[in-house]
Image 1: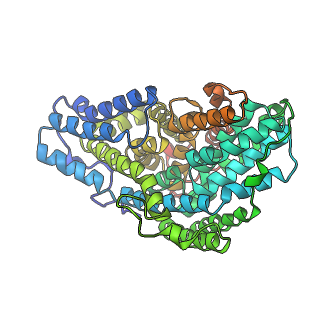
Image 2 (image 1 turned 90 degrees about the vertical axis):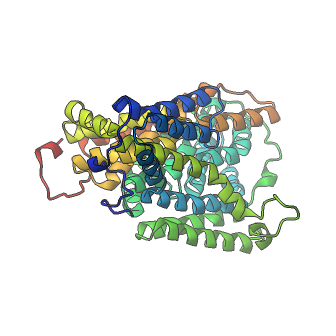
Length: 480
């Protein structure tokens, strides 16, 4: 965990103020360039962490043109790239990426499919089972896109043949994917939210679980009400894919969660999770040592699951570093300090208003950007952390407000990468089995994300689940 007085911290230090041509407007240039390119790519449905690299690179280049002292500007960029919290996030991502690959290779998809299909569930009950399966898968892998890619090809056609409402079934699988992205210790949004707020993973998961689980519980109501009503058909030969042994991979996920809750470093928890997943996969015959690592036949081919897992998060890591560099420029040029002071004077005069500001600023940041973790990187260190500290909010509370907010509206808009991937997987499944294809705007029916927003607002207005960094300190501006 980074020390607050570290030179790598995003806290604003007036002694390092970076003078820009045009004042605060000049300091905003990198952010304007970055967001403009992200919106452009996202609207064109070409968004993605690797596609966003050019946006981050051009933002840094554009900022240099407005810096009065080019050397100081470059030093600020380097401080952002070397931010200690950012390095923790990058390290955790490396092991989380491999962990997700191991869970899939170990047959977790087949195990969850077996669980759902052997219950004899039909109609709305199958939709509920699909929701639970997607929740478990996304919790185990920490990836929403991986969840929809893995489960949609099987659960969607099976559910439609079993009398589920196609639109609600599709939206519910997306909802289950969002649940894990919101809560899983190995999720990129959980990792970013925790470490940008200098919160322990144990505190974050423990305090976020009530918010996420209550929202999931409420989401069950519309699932059961609107999930059925389809036409029953004979089930194709999907049963050939099921294998109950895949459920044993959940033991590795439980291992990671238990270690994180016991206060172990998230990187250590992930390493043990990787080791246990590999061992369980080999014991069940799903994974061979050769598939973990081997000398490829040709140069350029993958050496196995380890390389593939790391490659899967490389795009996110590089973009995260670029965003951290841009954020550091915003901080040292005084932009974020000015925005924070404005928020404190106008819209954040009480702890309730501060929490609402965190929620809606995070949501606004996530709307134009096709990936939600980068949105957290933009607002977490520079806005959420200093504003939350101003009102004595506990690090885990700040992390939870930001992470829950970034997992609401984000999963309903069709230019976001997970929604794009989700719809593509649903379209392929529908075409393969000649099934009706719901509109991409079906994502707006996603039950979990609306109930999560409602639970989050309830928590803010009532004070439920709110924790303070220094409970014994009583200040006028800390009261609701």
